[in-house]
Amino acid sequence: MNHLDFRVIDSHTGGEPTRTIVEGGPDLSCDPISGRPLSTVGEKLDCLREHFDGYRRALVNEPRGSEVMVGALLVPTHTHGCLQGVIFFNNVGYLGMCGHGTIGVMETLRYLGQIVPGKIQLDTCVGTVGVELHSDRRVSIENVASYRAASQIRLDLENLPTLMADVAYGGNWFCLVQCPDPSWLDRPAKDLLSLSDRILKQIRLQFPQVDHVELFGPPIDPMNDSRSFVLCPGGAYDRSPCGTGTSAKLACLAADGKLEPATTWRQESIIGSVFEASYEWLDRSQGHIAPTISSKAFVNADCRVIIDPDDPFAWGIHH
Image 1 (cartoon, one colour):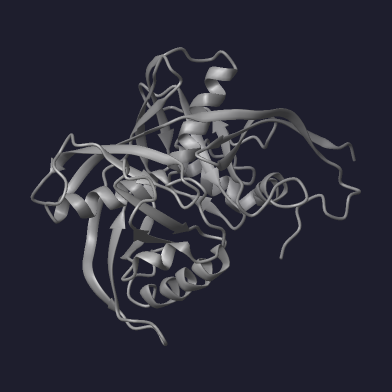
Image 2 (image 1 turned 90 degrees about the horizontal axis):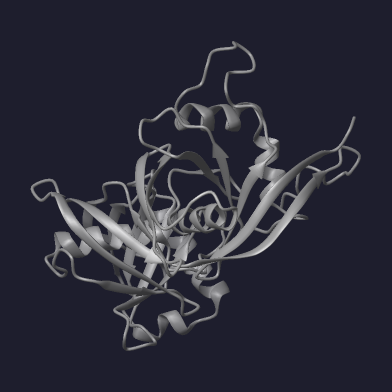
């Protein structure tokens, strides 16, 4: 059997990598078993997961990738007004939406000469996302509707003070916890990962849809409003401030009356990168907001990825 090859563009947004697959990949136009045409991005994602999941594992896991890598597969879209469809995935599965990844996709399309400054729409499995490329290469995402589902959830973890959590949606589901001690976010990443995993296990007893945890504390840079540590599905932490997580944070701030519409919120990541964010109300009575997230991405590789079927680790290393 001949080897498979893909053209990928690697970028990072605030330190968090995105690998955009621009050539190669499986045919997702129809179901390979029934032959039924697949029109929506959600249907294409289901097909990828059910029949071609090896491509996900091969493209983002070791030895070609790492646990922190997020993949973005560009697919045709049938949604009116959308330029492109995109499916996001990581080391353990698929993501409904990815903020840093969307910014990475936009920088990739700019790098390829497929877009110029202006507004476009991208089709994701959770809905249409409006995106603007600015003349300075900054990208602004008009994310899907975000909202807080629950507040002041008590978490009692052994050998820790009682924590209070919010649960919110920003394209993915988050448990948001304000650190009771400002020094918590100065701990080593392995300790924060362990703490976040304990929080995740407890919150999922009540909210099984949650797969991200955000810990918040004071920023290092006084120009910023908050600093966060974000646990992603698969056990890695987000090097960026997390676009969907920042959207969830805005929903909580809006619900508590702590941030007015159109006011800029500067969210600092655990490594010091920053996303600027604001929101407008979609439905104040339901607590639904329309968040906008802004940042830059930078292309750092344009290469061919090879899958050799004789390679014992052709389809990724699984820890």
